Image 1 (cartoon, rainbow, N blue to C red):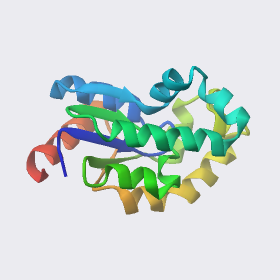
Image 2 (image 1 turned 60 degrees about the horizontal axis):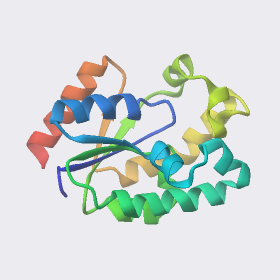
Image 3 (image 1 turned 90 degrees about the horizontal axis):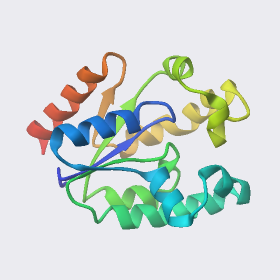
Image 4 (image 1 turned 180 degrees about the vertical axis):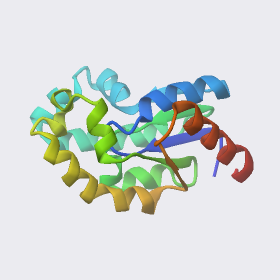
Length: 167
């Protein structure tokens, strides 16, 4: 495990991008939002890629995982569904510290606009079904789990402690 590459996984709205940007800044690392990386690479918005098909988006995501797993001194905020393909996690498992940002569905629903997220456009109930589908995968594939149930500062401190002690 290389502490110079950190992959954040978790539900849509768990705080991966926000936490990732701040963590990268604290560590002096680069930051990469995987969905934005995919958008730049394909010249299409995530919504457009999903409009083609979810499989098409997932193929783009898998390609991005292979490319991003070669980075150094980078914090990567993955898309929420990155765990749906084992090959995505395999690209990172020996090259990065994989941290599951765990957050309750209720807290996520308080903060996010479900209309702006392709997989959540069908409403709030979809977030619960995504949680049921994915939370065991997040736990299975992460090296460490950090709860996002306090302040962002607390979450950052917990991640930095893990990185400094465990890696």
